Every structure is written in structure tokens, then in C-alpha cells.
Image (tube, rainbow, N blue to C red; front, top):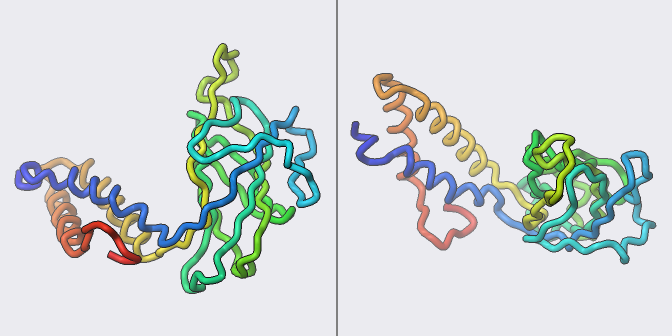
Length: 224
């Protein structure tokens, strides 16, 4: 009853949403993407550094791109700032959009022409190698497929598009990530348990105590 009156679960959910962006301690934006649709999955993708993408369509953050059931190549440049300390992992954060179906868009990511990793709507983060911590510019090329727009194979009068959010090189704060993951799981378990189960109150008490220890006053610094 106490947690219901105090809205503990809703309060913790809001505070989780508040601190989750702090998992990325630093961000360094990618350049705008150059976009080229392909005719089929068999068309050789222009992912190497010698390809000329100057005439391709430029895709800016906070804009729509692509259509359903389309193979594509996206190209952008990035660098890891040499001033970033090497004690925290660094990754590419690639929120390309959500097609409304299982995991698309999906793509094979190549860096400087070499295949490196895969990404999709459920895996938007790619850890980067230590060898690229030199401040030098790299070429990122994504060869992929947009998906079916959540509607299967039927024809569409108005083809759907994907919404690109800002992509960046990010520095990960692992203690914050560990805390957020643990708190999210504990909250998820607590909200599924009946009020008559003692463990529910224990979990909510623990979450409430943990968040009382955090200084969540804005503006945030590098820690909180």
C-alpha cells in the first residue's frame, strides 16, 4: 500500500529515463550520411574508400530516409577524439530508425572498407577497436536492407520511411550502464509481482534507497 500511495514504481521509471542518457559520458557526432539505394541484394555495394558518394542523397539527423524493402548503402565519416581518456570503452551509436517489424533496418558495417560488425534496430551500438583512438577520420559504410515496414509483402500505396536520429561516437560509462541495467531488471520484476508477494516490497525498497543516493539535480556533470 505504501508504494502504491508513493507511486514508487512510476517514480523509479521516470528517474531511470532521466539517467539512462548518461550511460554515454561523451558524444562526438558523425558527419551527415550519404545515401544510395541499390537495385537488389546482389548489386555490389560501394563501401570502399575509393567510391565517389558526392552525388548521393545527403541524410541529416532528424529526417526521414529510405523506403520499405530497399537495399541501401549509407556512408559517413567519424573519428574518436584523441583527447578522450582510454579507460572507458568507445562505440558507434547508430539509431537509423525502426521499420516496425522484427529487427530492421539491418546492415553490415564496414570501417575503412573492411567488414567489421552488424547493426539492426535491436543492436544500435558497435564497440570500436582501440587502434582507432588516434583522432584520425574513418569511413563508415553501412550495407543493408530497410525491412518491410511492419506490413509484410503486400503492396503499399504510401511506402513507409525510416526516421534517422543523431548518430555519434560515444564513450560508455560502465558503472552507470551496470546500475541502469540492474535497476531496470529489478523494476521489471517488481511490477510483475503481486502486492501479496513480500519480494515486491523488498525490490521497491531497494530501488527507492538506491535512487535516493543519486544526485539527479540538473545540470549533470560527468558524474551524478
